[in-house]
Amino acid sequence: MSALLEVEDLRVAYGKVEAVKGVSFTVEEGQVVTLIGVNGAGKTTTLHTLSGLLTPSAGRVRFAGRDLTGMPAHRVVALGLAHSPEGRHIFPRLTVGENLLLGAYLRKNDPAVADDLERVHTLFERLRERRDQPAGTLSGGEQQMLAMGRALMCRPRLLMLDEPSMGLSPLMMKKIMATVAELKAAGTTILLVEQNARAALALADQGHVMETGRIVLSGTGADLLHDDSVRRAYLGED
Image (cartoon, rainbow, N blue to C red; front, side, top):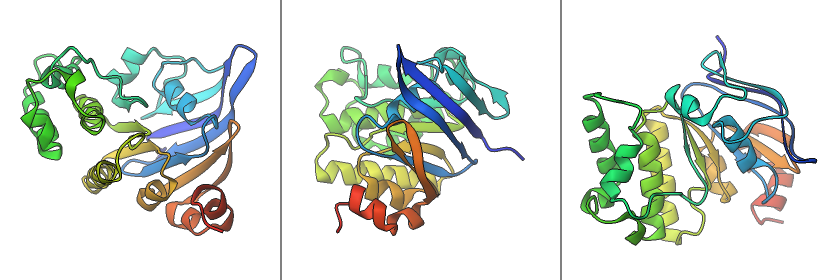
């Protein structure tokens, strides 16, 4: 049986500058897979390409056995691949509730939307409390909850999270990563890009280290946590 997501020799360029240089990896159903690396390594560009926001210059992307290469973003979402982007990109003038329902926009007349909304409210009680509040008035951590909740509202087969803890207080970061762990325990398949390499690898079944557009090291999350080069470069250890 093939993996849920298969990325093969993916290449992405901005003009003449190649940002992703032949990346290959897979994500199995139920796994958490993480991409770690410094800023500019190509992690976010990879996620943007998988979700249809960028078109690759070469390579293949297959999701649930279907070729997604070059497919527009709205069709990618409809197939069950959801993206919670870096920077959150919530709609600040809409209410929290309206933002969440936009995540279910493609699920017309689906009675299960109400169940999924309750699930999101259970994961993030603050969103329930602030459902009638303009989203732009939320704190950074609450906006991150909203971005994740909105992505979950499309009931994805694979959830991509890009830097969910960026810019958050240590307490809020702990809450967000605990929620990722809760989603993993519930069987959600996750592709995670995260600046906190220690937290990401602790959750991950598989991890890949990216440098200048290439994957330079791969292994289980536990193996990478104990790899000397990873500890020195990304975990701040000697």
